[in-house]
Image (cartoon, rainbow, N blue to C red; front, top):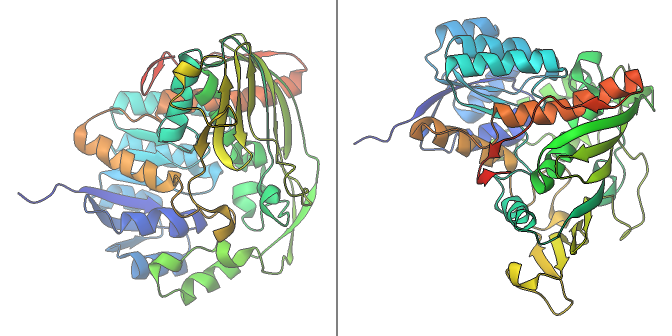
Length: 412
């Protein structure tokens, strides 16, 4: 019997598509890459040439209406996510939505309602730091079993690439993706932070925040440099623009129209409270000083991310831990070698959320099961960010309206 395949269309032939999703999609035996769509013909032509898509579209509505596809990967700038998702879901297409789901709760709820009504599968990125990652699932399970006792407080600073070497500061490209008002700015570009907190500790109850534009202007690499790069690529596995863009001259001056620094105090459903800073560092930090990874402190143990490991736990409940090293800690080794690749290229051997999400969506479609990183998850993470903005505007605490009754491996 021939292997069943899911017919896929991709909208947005930008950096994230060509570096991560398309190289994986083209290799999957359970995927038929039917169509690519972008407003620039240079990009659709290059991606069709490199990754084997049979059809090219310059108009998204045309692709949805005419292409024989079952799933759409929405890999465009954040300002397009709502209309593109609603169009795809209205046509009963399964969707993968690159981060963020939306930049306000009204739009996020519109997306969720449409997905539920259509009965399609949906993944809301990012899946990194979620229960789709076995290491994160293990941490979640241990905390749930009580390895930390009662969680008291936590802290996290998600500050971008400076901890890995020379600081990039603001993103080196992508005005529509990172700088315009409807992009949501760095807060909505970095949902990894609330995702990691929720995966470890469970749902959020409220947020009190201060959000600002700290650096009002930036210089970025002009958009046409990406098209020049893509036209020169001959190997589909070497189409990662990040390998070159960090070294290109930033000759285009842009204004920052959305929040680039957000400092939030989160109260979690388990009673713990903690701080979370999302922003950018514009200069390197000293080697070994760390970059503000998640740290969780409880009555019976502590959980720390980083310091050369994916995560480490010390606990008085040693019997709950898979093993304890000579230093008294249970360490989850870091997978891959961060020194072998430029940020944000996934390191060899590490969890690659782009690939994992792609595989998970296709599997869920073929097996008719609900994705782990689904609309309920996306709504909750989106509200943690949108709530921070609302709190900053009003000066008052924002009480969450969403929660997570169950997720992946069981009840929270």
